[in-house]
Length: 383
Image: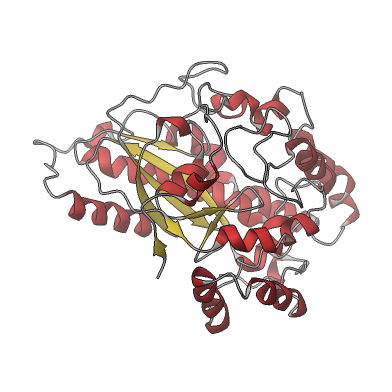
C-alpha cells in the first residue's frame, strides 16, 4: 500500500514564492521558436543519417512503427482537446445526473478512465499555481482557440482534475536512446483517453476540459492527485510504473473526492541514487544536491529540486535522431514491471532509507537499466 500523506512531499522543499510558469519558456516552445535546438529537425536528422544506414534501433521499420504510433494524436489532437462537446449529434435528453454522492461518482470516473486505457488515475483539487500563465508556441498550435502569448484562464468552476497516467511499454523503453515507439503511442493514448473521459463527464451534464501537456504543469497536478512523486530526473515517479508513464488530465466541475498525496520514499531514494544523472547522455540531470536556483528560464523558482538543463537535453535529442530520449527512464531503478523482488524493494523503500544503497548497487549488479535493442518490430516482446 502507498503511504498516504496529508501534504505532498514537495512542500518540505518550498523555499519561496512559486509563480505560475509561462509555457513560452518551456523547452519545446523555445525549440519551436528556434531559440534552442529544433526538435522538428531531430527526426529529420535521424531519418537522413541513421535510417538510411540501417543503424540498429534506427531502421526504417523502427521509424515506421514510431510514426505510426503517433497517428491518432496527429489526426485528432486539434479536436480531441477541444473545449466544446464532441457529441452534439448525440445529445442525451433530459436533465443531467445530479452527483449527490461525490465518492460514488469519483469511483465511476476512475473506472471509466481505466476502461478507456488509463494505467493510473487520481483526483486533485486544482491548485491555480500549476496553471500556465500564458500559452506557448508548442501547444497553442494544437488548440485552435488560442495563440502563443494568450493568457491561460481556467474558470474557477473547474475545481477538480482527473489526472491520468498512461503506461509506456517496459521492453520498448529499454531500447532508448534508440527509437522508442511507446513514447509516441503514449501521446495517441493520451488524446484518446483524456478526450473520452471528458466526453463522458459532459454527457452526464457537467463541464470538462481534456488536456495533454497544455494548460498546466502535469507533474505537480499528478503529485497532488496521489499518483507519485517528483524524481531527480524531473519526471513523476509512480509506484507501479516508476517514471515510465505519460500524463494527461481532465479539468471538470463535476464534484469529486480528491486523493491524498503519497510518500513512496522517492525523495530519499533519489538523493542516494543518481543513476539517471550518471547515465544521461546529454549530462542534463544534476548529480549534486537540490537547488532552488534555475539553470535557465525553462526552470521555475521557489522549490528545492534537481533542475533539468533543457538545452542540453534537447541537443542530445537531436543527436539521437528520435522523437524523444528515455535513458533517464530506462536507468531508473523504479522502472520495473511488477514482480516478487521488485514489489518487495518498493515496500521496503517506503518504510526506510537504510537499504537504498544496497538496492541501487543491486540494480547495477543485476544489469538493469542497460540498453537492449530488439532490432526489428517482429523481434520485439509485444504486450
